Each structure stands twice: as C-alpha cells, then as structure tokens.
Image (tube, rainbow, N blue to C red; front, side, top):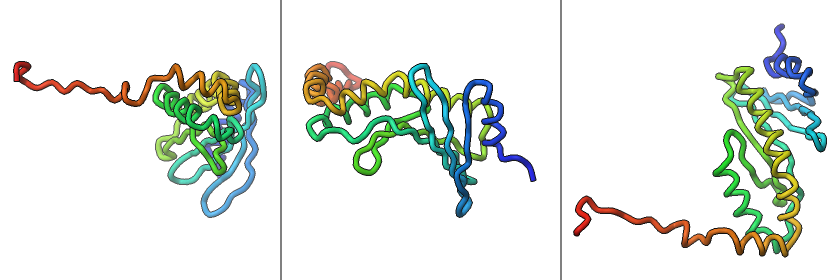
Length: 165
C-alpha cells in the first residue's frame, strides 16, 4: 500500500521544521496534527483529510470578552477580506480559529506547502493583535473609533448612462 500524500508531503517538509502525527481514522476521514516552530512560538495545526478535501484548523485565541466582540469580529471580517487562502472563523464558545481547505482531488505539494505557509505566517502576524483586541475593552473601543462606519462603507454612487438624467 502506498504512503498517503499528506504523510509524504510532511516528510518533505521535515527539513523546514514541520512534524506530523496521524491521530485517528474514522468513516473515511484521517485526523492529524502538524507542528511547527515559528520565530516566536510553536503552533499546532489540526488536519482532517477525506476524499473531498483537506481541512486545516489552527486555534488563534480563546473566546473574547463580551465587551470586545463587536470590534474583534469586525476586525476578523476585515482581515478575511484582505487575506488569501486562509480565513478566520469562530468555533464553539466563540474561540477563534484560522482555517483553510484544499480540494483533495487537486492536491499538489505546492498548494499544500503554500497553505501551511499562509497559516503560519498569518498566525505569526496577527495572533497577538487578536489576543489583545479580544481581551481589552479599551483597545476594542479605540479600534471601533478608528474603523470606518458601516454607513460609510456602504455608500455606492449609482451612475446612469445619461449623467444629465
């Protein structure tokens, strides 16, 4: 029996510092954990692999303070618009995750490596800001005061064909 692509890809990434441990298999899904040491801390990325897709999930921050949620959620949505490949998501109890998915049928080493790179880079870049914004009412209020108002971002000028109409 041949080695699964995920295992083979992680073996190729060992020289870059990645490790992978398969945790379990059930109902056609393989669950595993990838570990990587960024310049500041170790991250754990959880993977679920089935015939349809490869799903990646990385915990970024614990649930936010209720007083911070509006600012935090707006910030996460703003980041989702700016980021490529990976997106922030809320889990049960409002825990914040960084997630990505790749179609299994088109899985290639380059896209797999790029996804891991995006996840680790975005985590390294944003996790501290998110942790602070999730826990500090003062920072949340300051961020909201600087963020564009919803009404401002929704102003759309509709131009007719005849500008004189």
